[in-house]
Amino acid sequence: MDLANALLELPAPLWAWVRATPVYILLGLFLALVLYPLLRLLGVATNLIAKLFVLLHLVAPKPRPVLPSEKTYITSSPSGKTTPRPLPCWYDRWLAERRLSEQRVRPEQAFPTPDVGSIEPAELLLSVVFPAYNEQDRVIPTLEEAVEYLDKHFGRSTGAKNPDVPVKKRHAPNVADPKEKGLSGYEIIVVDDGSRDKTVDVVLDFAQKNGLHDVLRVVSLAKNRGKGGSVTHGLRHVRGEYALFADADGASRFSDVAKLIEGVEEVVDGSRRGVAIGSRAHLVGSEAVVKRSALRNFLMRSFHLVLTILTPPATSRIRDTQCGFKLFTRASLPHIVPYMHTEGWIFDIEMLMLAESAPATPVLGSDGTVIGTSPGIKVAEVPIQWHEVGGSKLNVIQDSIKMAIGLAVLRASWMMGVYRRRLT
Image 1: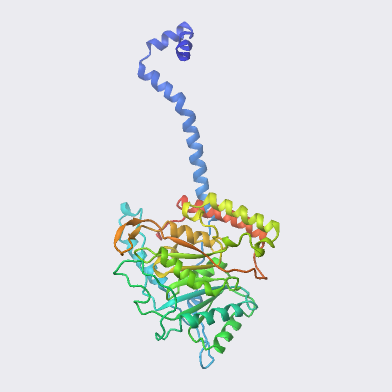
Image 2: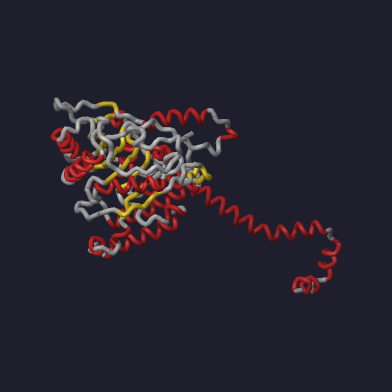
């Protein structure tokens, strides 16, 4: 009614022009008046997105190439010699096969490229990766606890000892579980992240004294990568059916490995993909956490709020993403490790996001039959024992700010296609 009144109040010459003008011209003028501001706004938004895309390409982390010396390891020997040996690497074979598969795809079929989940069969039951940077004073108690537990429950890789760990069958009948494969034994890979102290020497001395010849392997990175880079590098070279990474400071109890294996078998899918992560969330009200400074607890809660806002649904529901005690089934590694970019403190979050975004796989019923499909790799959050250890290299204020910024860059990079599940 108001529009009609406004038209009737137009000056006579203008009203005459309106009546004489064809309807399609009037409609075009009306749409132009309405759409012009929207088009300008769209143009500004497009320009901002383009600039953000370029900026992300400049600031998004890009891991440096692996150096030849970093594809070797040293270990103890009965003779006491420590000659570098070639480091087994499932990742190199996966990478070659993936690049070949992408070259065969026609341009019009390039997006999306199916994720490749092939990986060489496991040679033993458990691989343990310890990232270490200047840990000469803290690594030995951790190794002592780990070796005592692993010797008792896994045995060394002679094939003579059955693993004393819970393994529940929750997968397809044609996919053998670890016990059916006859796997046993373990390996420990200590990834020295360019330490300036005697971390390598004390680890090798420990291996020599305990007869861990070729069981405990030391990989030295020529240039410091960060904790995330060390963990990723170690996971590229594991030979176990299960792959665990743990902090070298011994803050977590190694006896909780059994809990992680039980947890991962509860969520494993038809392709034997699954992740179990140690969680300290149940300790929030404990004495160890209460004793922390008010600033540290505030920053911890603030970071968790940012995490909830910026991460996808499944990852945002995880209560403790940063605990350095995580276990992966071997089948899950090709969907996570090759696509890692972050090498700093928030690498755990990228791992969990990659697990969540992994391609669909069969869902199994209680009898092992396929009843549907489900995207992503399921993650079990398992409460573990944990205690505060002195000598942390984390600068609470500085690193908290870096983690928040890094998380924003990481999420934006994956959302805008700077990072993707494609290599070429």
